[in-house]
Image 1 (cartoon, helix red, strand yellow):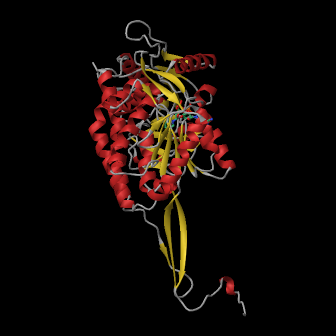
Image 2 (cartoon, protein in one colour; image 1 turned 90 degrees about the vertical axis):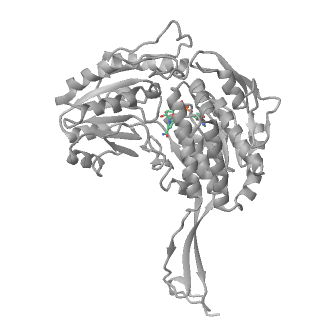
Image 3 (cartoon, helix red, strand yellow; image 1 turned 180 degrees about the vertical axis):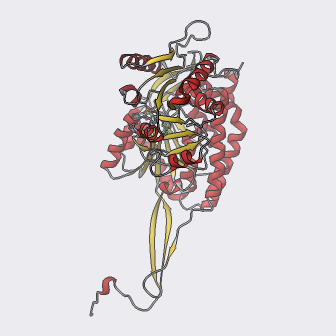
Length: 512
Ligand code: NAD
């Protein structure tokens, strides 16, 4: 049993929380709307939060702009030191923050702690990166000339995040953006503002201790109206937006119209191809966790299983048996496998999708439904379900953010890959096989078209060391590891002439 009152106290969450923070300061204008935040775990009110007005937003951006002028002058390894300290604070607060993530968002406690661990890992990564913001040198075609490139920060980076990873997505973006010399303005999901306030309070300790200028880390609590202001705001040269494809299309269009930069991390429709050569016991673990983990509310959740006809019946039987053993309930109880959906709207979407699937001819081999009665009082607990379906069905082509798994048969690998790729989204994909030819074909240019393609691992649970993101309607953005940092900087090519003449390009002569 978790004493949430103590968790809130330890994280500095008050009964009523302010709308914006520019680092050390918290405030909200008289017009800020007060909203109660409820937990999907038990339906109880956790705390109330003020939602920012447009004026609050504008004032925050002005402070951030000011902070950028001095933060960009701090040497990158020193900026890394600040991020190192954030990592240490997160280690100290891992237990409490993980619990609040679980209580506010509804994911299991293990996953809540896992999310905070990802934050710590990206801080470690960013610290190393702060000494490795490398540019190339080139050989000039002109004598006594030197050419090289360097990377400069962009300015104020906007971060719009989704409810399902309420804290990790911020850190993936902010840790990198900071070491690159940017300042950050974060608008978290309106469904999970309290975990965001907790993160800002943790960062605040580091900012105060190091006397960092006000505005390096800003938080604006608000709904999509604040997100829209950000998308149109030319004072934000880069916006990293995580959420639905619907949101990404709107934000992408607004940023595109002003020729700004974006990192879009949108919906997925992820599948596992299970070949006749798959280790079915291993596959079961990957498929089960991928489909029901976080109650199917991960962008990388497994939505489709594309199964070879020769192992279809055997695997279906295993899967149905495993679903029968799932424990659904309070995610803060570590014996539980599946927690609640985020809210009643999500439950309605889940039920609508089941109906649509049935109308289109889907055959449910594990039935869904909403759980009622003791310990399900919030009305957000649903049964993970499985439907035999066809890839081309409209509902299968659509990302439903809930634990509904579609299973389908294939005959040969070409057909399976065509099915895997035959959806509008392109985030995560996997093949389960012990056959090297099948695995390599899947990873080749004629294989998966997704940003993430795994062999003998499910679709969810990416490590921070790789670049994370997807193609097509997933938005094309990359964040986290590898060279994703380059998106947070502007590249400048420099040519220096140390000769006594100035040879012009294309042999042009000016006789003066
Ligand atoms: P959502 O699109 O409803 O909201 C996401 C964020 O965008 C919120 O902060 C919201 O206030 C804001 N927003 C919504 N409409 C906006 C608009 N028109 N202009 C500006 N801002 C706007 O998504 P959600 O329900 O919070 O999250 C679930 C979705 O996020 C799923 O589709 C999931 O796949 C996706 N997701 C993707 C990734 C990834 O890395 N690809 C990671 C996590 C979640």
